[in-house]
Image (cartoon, rainbow, N blue to C red; front, side, top):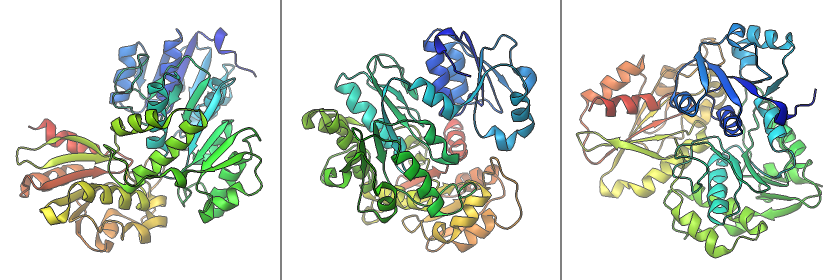
Amino acid sequence: MEINLSKIKNVHFIGIGGIGISAIARMMMLAGKKVTGQDVQDSDIVNELRKMGAEVNIGQSYDAIPQDSDLIVYTIAIENYAPELFESLQEQHIPIRSYPQMLNIVSEGKYTIAVSGTHGKTTTTAMIAEILCDAKLEPTVVVGSLLINPNSTDTSTGSNFIAGKSKYFVVEACEYRRSFLNINPNILVITNIEEDHLDYYKDIEDIKSAFRELAMKVSSDGFIICNPNDSNIQDVIDGVSAQIIDYSLAINLNMKLKVPGVYNKKNAGCAQSVARVLSVSDIQIESSLGEFVGTWRRFQFKGKLTSGALIYDDYAHHPTEVIATLEGFRELYPVSEGWKITVLFQPHLYSRTKALLPEFIKSFSDADMVIVLPIYAAREEDDGSVSSSIFANSIVGPNAVAPASFEEAESYIKNNIFTDKDIIVTMGAGVAFQIGDNLLRDL
């Protein structure tokens, strides 16, 4: 059944607090539609949606769907964590679409710039958004984080959505469950490809097959921006009709950025390559990138304890991301100046932790102490084969402990001596950031 958004008045969102799906909810409200939703828990995102006028119920059930709903949008995660609810959706008459399917609908007729990759896609998407907004190209943007001080009159600080007026649509394209195949890019960015989401994909070849299917969707008058010398990407782009642009040629290691780390210079190279395709001047590009301050949960400074210790938060949840993030911290806070780094890391998913454990345990070499929090289970059951204790006992390099709860982890921080030469980083894709928030709130 075709969806004509102009005729839709009432939209209900299941999993409305998700970082991606909430952007579509914002879009619908700004288009004058009534938005209702449900989620398993309250959050800052849910509260912001309420302030905009959304009616959100905490606790998920079929009975919470209003009878006057014209469209139901759901997070694909419910297929795993709430299969009964998902099955109920298939049996009713209201049109239903997944979040990835909605991306296809809202991008129809737009010039779509899709940013994909195992790492860096959120920051790269935000960098592109900042450049295009500064250049007055007025893009519509959906990003998998909250933008910090986005330069747009159409959105407020802390939004994951910019309502633009032009043909340009910039979207973060996630590979999980091949969801990005719902997007039809005119410009496709592939930051990198590594093993991830191994609860769904079989192996790296399976992952590459999904990226190749996406790359093949880019037409001959389109562009694929990537590092064609990367062995995992070479197979993906072999024989595609789109023009290949090597973003590594745009990387400037001497570029002055407010976000640290070589990996952010690579992200900047991707963003610069996109902007050049759209004829944005290098002067404008360099100015925008130079003022870019990052996004929510990416190297985000949260505050200072009474001891002087600095609290940061970062979303890194893959070994490569952990290494890159800690290298960025060491760039700003070197050992030679006496800085010490304590990481409170929450592994994400049992399957990911087990599959990537050999890489994880070697990825914390730039830290002085690692506190391994209870694993964030999300949609998975614990089969007993991996645990935070196993993780902590296997870490190579820094000292490591595995408290049994978040409360114990907070007590560990409170009962140990930290000074104004200490950095405390909460890290992971789960809810590790809550510890930093609690420590600062206790002040």
